Length: 221
Image (cartoon, rainbow, N blue to C red; front, side, top):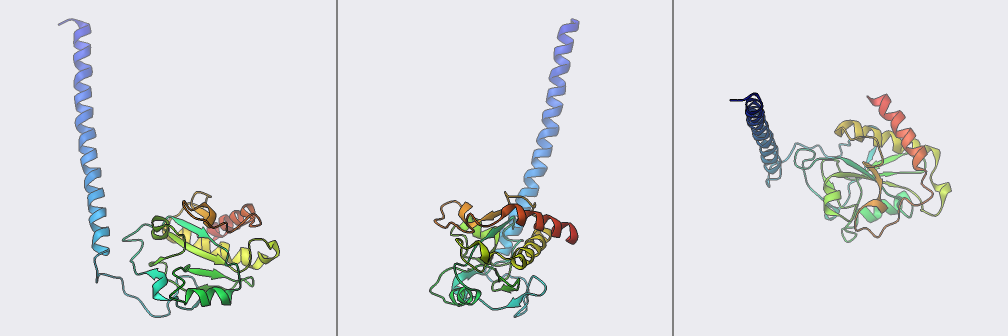
């Protein structure tokens, strides 16, 4: 066998070895994916659910006001569905009007949280449950929705207290579910595919908000 042919044969042997190793790694990866999917399916089985306490909140200091059960779906996130996104909304009204709407079974929509102009946080749906807030099933299942008291065309509604409080809330959610603090994972309702909503609107100061979220995220790390 000539040197050139020996070299080619050696390349083929290395290629086969790499293929076998790669195949084994792929098989292991497939096994992990299958196990994870089976775990998710188990959590989605009717009757299987995590223990809950009535009135319990996910964000310290929030007040609990339950939304109508017609406006959300019971789940066990993140075990059945990953949470990898926070969606920012504006109520187009007061906190009181938003609470009333989310308690109305005919409204067919609600967010997990409402942040008032005074910075107070109201939680209406547990983070482990799927809120009907995005108008997109996939985005509903993988996100936490935060409403903000006010109107999109009134920049004065977006107070310093609101920005600061909401940023702490979003930072805590990101820390809990290991969500990157960037604009791919913290988005406005307007950015959800298929939506006809425009919130939070042009007056929402994304640069200011993201700086506050990053600062709060560093504090919670």
